[in-house]
Length: 113
Image (cartoon, rainbow, N blue to C red; front, side):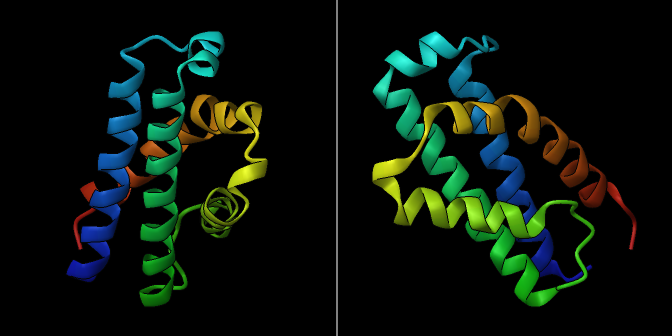
């Protein structure tokens, strides 16, 4: 794996860890919904994850991340359709998709080339 790809994967890993840190181990949708700073912070990390994934795909289109294209599409939605971002959708990403992505990224970063 190219060093540049590893750097972007590490950026994704760092953003996922930041989301977990922001939540403080508590996954409570109602707390998330009422905390604008938390929502904006998580949205920003999703933007970073999507941009890093976009860069990975440009270098390594055959990347073995299951939903790589959807991750980039989500980034575009959060940035360009900021006025229609749905808290329920973002929460679903945080609760169901980020944990799976974390495992994929960890596995790729721990793979010997």
